[in-house]
Length: 190
Image 1 (cartoon, rainbow, N blue to C red):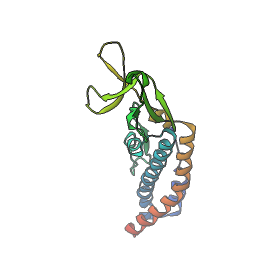
Image 2 (tube, rainbow, N blue to C red; image 1 turned 30 degrees about the vertical axis):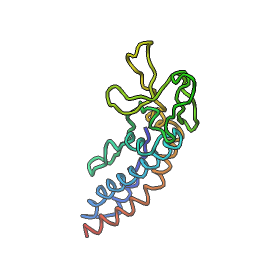
Image 3 (cartoon, helix red, strand yellow; image 1 turned 90 degrees about the horizontal axis):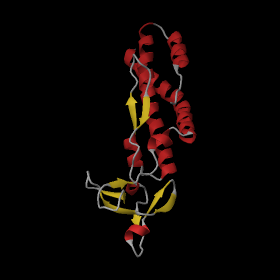
């Protein structure tokens, strides 16, 4: 989990202000935290997309702001969900490798920034969704298909590289956003 403690900034500002103006601080802090969370999420999405070669749209669907800050709870939570994303959804897409026997040749897909051939796989329609997927057979029968997933977004989300990027962004953006939000909140109180 990535944490950024802003309590000192909020308390220091509250001491500096008096009366009704003090009430503007929690409002400004919650606004600023939510804006910072949006920026941190965007930077995280870009970082994850760059590492995994997954389309940013798919990463954005998987990385969400689960809890937004409120005046009573100055905390925002960003979570990653949806771990099994099929290889067909990656940036360069999956392509059938030409060969004598289609199943033996496999599918070529670009995950983790490198194109690789996944032997024994093929592109077909998913049994439940009907969408195209990269799949492999689990037995000799036509029976159940196993979808082949690429890198897990939650696993990359907690990686040191992505965490560092998100934390640095939060540290840079917090003072800027808090100052802006405080100016807006003080104008509405005055």
